[in-house]
Length: 200
Image 1 (cartoon, one colour):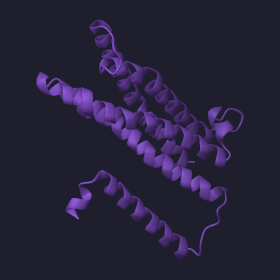
Image 2 (image 1 turned 45 degrees about the vertical axis):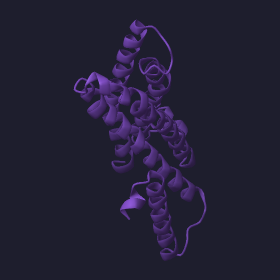
Image 3 (image 1 turned 90 degrees about the vertical axis):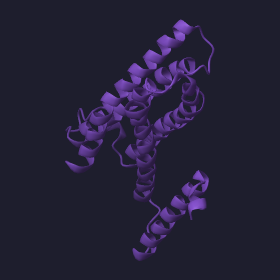
C-alpha cells in the first residue's frame, strides 16, 4: 500500500474509486436516484466544493506557507520554489479558480437563483439570494484577480516571461498584494456561501 500511495495519480484514482463505491452504495440503498435537475445540481455542487477546496487551499498555502517562508530559504535553494513548485501550484490554483466559478454558476442556474443572486436579492426579497450573491460576487472578483492580475504578474516574477529586473520586482509585489487581497476576501466569501445554505 505504501508503494501505491507514493504515486499521486494512483492515490487520486483510489480516492475517486472510493467516492464512486460510496455513491453506488448510497444509490442502491436509496432505491436509486432520478437523473433530474436535483441530481445534476448535487453533482455540480460536489465538484464545486472539491475544486473550491483546492483553490482556497492553494491561496492559503501561498499566503500562510510559501510567501512567509521565502525570506528563510537560502538563495541557492530559491530556484526550486520559483522554477518548480510555484509554477505547478499556480497551474492548479488558476484552473481550480475557474472550475470553482463555472460549477458555482451552474449550481445557481440549476437551482433557479442565478439572476436573483447576481442581483444581490434586490427585488426578490433579499435574504438567501443576498447572502449567496455576495459570495458569488466575491468569488468572481477573486477569480478575476487570479487570472488577470496574479497570474500575469507571477509569470514575470517567476521568469516565465522575460522582463527587466525592476518590472520583475514590481510584478512580484503586485502579485503578492492581490494574493493577500484574495485572502482578505476568502473568509467573507465563505461565510456568505455557508450562511446562504444554513441560515435561510
